[in-house]
Length: 189
Image 1 (tube, rainbow, N blue to C red):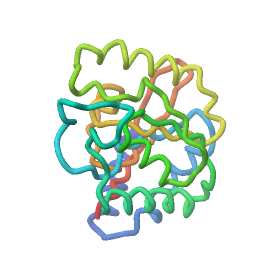
Image 2: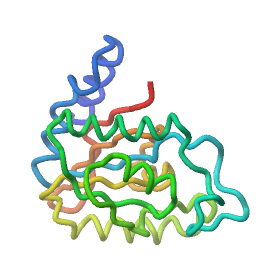
Image 3: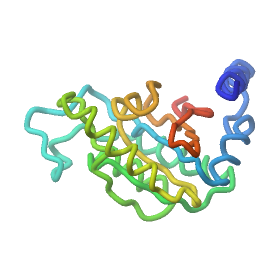
């Protein structure tokens, strides 16, 4: 029922042209209350996949944020602040487009978390990597707002939901360890 309510509220707000911060109070409040976190798909980085010569240590070999993606990342950080979250624990994939998104949020230090790395070119890693991330989430405190910046394939594997670039997906961690999406906000306009 909660997922349906959140979806209806988001749909109504989009149809009425409301400001995203105005209709999203419940997910933002939940994020501040513990046992919740957000997954963010990296901001806009045009293209598809990464080049064959990809090197995680060299941003020049990767698909990166464009100017719109950098503006989008800053706007996402502003959205957090406008909803009362000035600091957060921020974790990111080691891919440059995720690290740049996470840093441009300007919500605090960014920690690399390899479980958030893309497995798009290596789907054989999906099961193991998703289990690793779920174990990490099971033991995370979540008493401080927590932000995980990752890739579409990772977020979809965790939640069954396919986010747009820069989309914020609010997730509740239940006492039994299960995860439920309680809302999402698309940030490209």
